[in-house]
Each structure stands twice: as C-alpha cells, then as structure tokens.
Image (cartoon, rainbow, N blue to C red; front, side, top):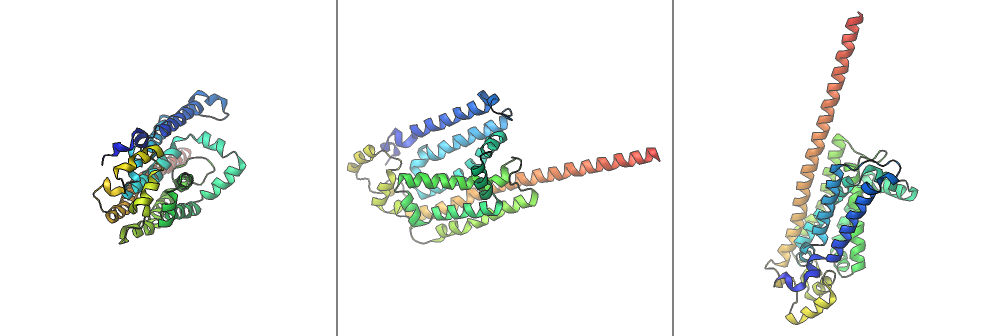
Length: 307
C-alpha cells in the first residue's frame, strides 16, 4: 500500500517543522540580532551557522519527514534514523552553537557540575553505550514505541548522551574536557567497539525480537505515535494489519539489516572523523616543529652575531 494513505500530517509532521523553524529563529535572535545584549559574545561565524542549519535540516529529515513514518514500519530505517541522529546531528549541533553560548549555559553551577561529570571521556563512553544498548533491548524498545511520553523521554535522553559522547571530541570551549591526537583517535575507536555487541545481537539473532515490528496488534499501537488517531481509525476498515502490507522484506531480514546499517553508518562517520583528527594532529605537529626549527635557527643566528 502507498504511504500516502496515512495523510500529510503523518508524512511531513507540520507541527515539528514549525518547532524546527522557531528554533532556527531563536538561534538567529540570540547569536545575531540580540548578541550585543550578552557580555562576552562574539560574532557568529559562517562555519557555526552552516553546522547548526545542517543539524536542524537533518533533525527534521530524521524525525519529521516520511523517514520517521517509514521508521515505524521498517526496523532498518529506524536504525538509520538513530545513526544519523546520534552520530551526525549531535556533533553538528555542538559545533553550531557558539562557544560563548555554551559558556553562558555552563555558568549555571548545577548544570555545569552535572554536564562536566557526564562529559568526562570514560563516563561519556559508558553513558552512551548503556543508553544505546538499553534503548534497543527488545522489551524496552517495544514499550517505548507504545507510549508517546516514554518515546519522547528516551529519545531526548539518548540524544543528550550522544552530546556527552561527542563533547570531548568536537568542543572547543575553554576549561571543558578535550582530547587531542592519539587519545582522541583511541576514544573514537573505543566508542565504535563498545556498541558492537548490541549491534551484533541484532544482526545474528535468528528470530524477530521486536513485537512492534512483527506483531500486527503491537505494530498498530506503535503507529499511533506518528499517525493521528482519527486517520488511523479511518484506515482500520482497509484491512491494515501489519508492516508486511508496505514491504516485501521479511521481518527477520529487516531486523538484521537494521543492525548492519547502524554499524556501516557508524564506521563511515568514524572513518571521516578519525581522518580529520589525524590531519589536524599532523598539521599541528608540523607547525610546532617548524616553529621550533625557526626559533632554533634564530637563536643560532643571534649567537653567531654576538660571537
């Protein structure tokens, strides 16, 4: 059946689009229009604006476009959503927020204490791994997909854990946890290794484990999270009983593909990240070596002149 039967609201989430637009307007007001009202503020750079807008665009694609609806039908699309949200949107969001705004947020003592604790490299790794693994545990994911409050709470908490994960890698705020060189590369590689067991269980299990993607009744209840109740009730007479009406892919294959997509997207993102880290690190080392060489030559020249 075509997805259009679910209606415009389910496919394009107009209310979520309005929320994204308001967020962009607020960002513009704080970082450009009202910037002079904040002590210590600095002009918004083109790089920051591009990264923030990219994070908002990707956020809408992941949670507001038809991709979100399809993610309730195909587990593989759900995992692609998670990969983009946690591994791309989160770091883009951090980079897009100017340092002076982060510093203002961290000026609140309670927030600073909690945030600095959770963004310590070891703690942030364990927090993200725990949240990701727990979220995709079958019993928990099925319950989350049947309750809008739980779904919202878990999504926000998981995204916050991704912010904590990426903070030591991409943040440039003074006084905040920052890794450099080989430590940063090791941190990224360890992050990839830690979520491998959760993805492996999804890939190699030989039976469907998520009722909201395999049981018709549970699936219909889960669809209520993204399809208006009136629309869903009106479709009951069409004989819609499960995701098999919208795809030819067996549930087990879809489930295994989801685990594979998560790992593939993660590896691609991490290869790019490690490449950028290595390039920046080698450039820093080269510049420092050139500076030391220049100072040494200047010192020798001065000694020669005085000698």
